[in-house]
Structure formats: structure tokens, C-alpha cells
Amino acid sequence: MSRAYRIRVRESLRRIERASDRVSTQLELLAVLPAEEIAALLAAELERSGYERVDGVFIRRKDPVQITVDPSNGHVVVQAAEERALERVLTRETGSASEGLPQHAFDRVGPVGVSQEPLNMEAPSEREKLQLPVTDHLEQALLDFRPQLDRIVNRVTVEALKRKASAMGRIKSIAEDGDGGSLTIVLEI
Image (cartoon, rainbow, N blue to C red):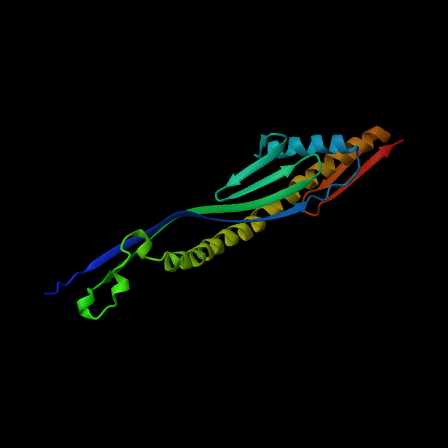
């Protein structure tokens, strides 16, 4: 007498998928003053603009984006990162040998009975799905923060020029055109 068996094997895949993207650039700071003085001016301006000092660099976060500025060399890193829990479950069910299935389908039942290959094949596509919004966030952050960083550089340059001019002689007048970005300093030497 034969008996019918139904075997169900379930495998799951759980892991954290992470996606990140980053870009770096250099602030264009004029060497009007010694590098240490320019770095101090830049640090003060970054702090006034809402950047937080952490281990000698200045950081600003706007989730999921982080901007890091090193005032000593003007190096800027903009990075975005996200993570998502990935959970996939695969269930396979087979019938008995009496239903026409080969006996080797029943030889190994348990965790080794199901290949995780189909589960692992889905993971790269999940990572790619996560990567697209991260890159989009980074691109938007670059558009948002570039004008702010340009204003910071302009303010640092103006202050450095004023200090340099005062070291060269007595400043008679200073005229700044905020819209055009021009600065006129009249000196008496």
C-alpha cells in the first residue's frame, strides 16, 4: 500500500541592504592671506551658517545627505546613504513519489532541501532599487547646497580681502555690491 506525502520547505532571507553615493569637490578659496587665517575665517563662517564642528571638520545633515567641509584645505564631501531591511521567503511544496515525482526529491528535506539561489538573485535588484533614490537625493543636495557654499566662499574672500587691505594701508572706503559680487576698497598708503 502506498501513501501520499506532501512536503513543504520554507526558506527565508533576511539582511540589511545599504546603498550610498558620494561626491567630493574643492572650495575655490583665494590665497589672499596665509592658509591658517583662511582656514580660521572659513571655520567661523561655516559655524555661522549652521554647520556643526566634529573632529576638526564641519558637518551639516539633511537626511539622508551629509555635507562635510574640512576648513584646513577646503575639501568638501557630499554623501547620501540609506538602508532598508530585506526579507524574502520562499516556500516550495512537493508531492509524493506515488504522484510521479522522483524519489530524490524526498531524499533531503530540510534547510538544505531548498536552494537560496532564487532568494539571493532578488537581492541585487533590491539594492539597485534602493540606489536610485540615494543618487537622486545626492543630486538634489548638490543643487541645494552649492549656492550656500558659494556664498560662504564669497564672504570668506571678502573678509580676507578686507584684512589684507588693512594690512597694506588705511582703508578710506569699502563698497560692496551684494548682487553683483563685487567689492571696491579704497586705500590710503
